[in-house]
Structures are given as structure tokens and as C-alpha cells.
Amino acid sequence: MSEMLVGALEPAVQQLGLTQVFIGVILVALVGNAAEHSTAVMVALKNKMDLAYGIAVGSSLQIALLVAPLLVFASYLFGTPLDLIFTRSRKLR
Image (tube, rainbow, N blue to C red; front, side):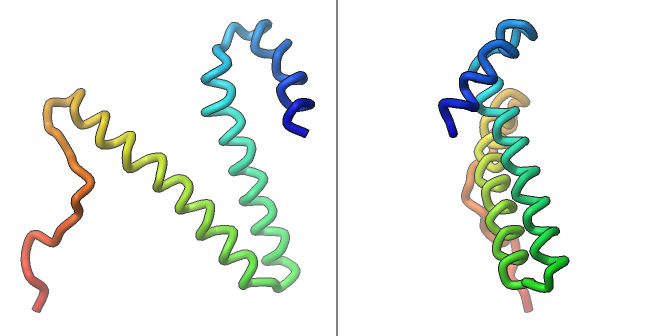
């Protein structure tokens, strides 16, 4: 299936002038994530909430694992370094 996907994308990459990295990292990930969301909705409609919940949590984790490191790298561009050490600033009572 992956060979069919790559074969189908090659003409589009050449025609649109997009890089293969952009297609692979951004577009394929977006399409895959949309498929996950539609699957979660379909199984929720069939009242299989445990499966729908698992799909939604897994998809959210994938996004978080991408966004958090990107924010760290972007923070260096703005001159305010951000690290991935998340601590509480004050004690909760």
C-alpha cells in the first residue's frame, strides 16, 4: 500500500512543485490523522465508546508529541528558550 501511495504522489509532487519532505511529513500525516478522526466518529456512532476513546487519545498524543518539540525549537527563534521540564511554579494547597 505504501508503494502505491508513493507512486500516486510522485506526479503530484512534480506538478505542484512541493518537496517530498513536505508531502511526507505534513500532508500524509494530515490525511492519516483525518482518517483516524473519521474512524473514531464511526465507531462512536456504533456505540463502541471504548474504541472511539482509545483512537481519540492516541491521535491527541501523536499531535502533542509533534507540537511540544516544535514549540521548543520555535522558542529559540523568539529569543526565549523553552525547555520540556514542566514543573509547578507554586505549591497547591
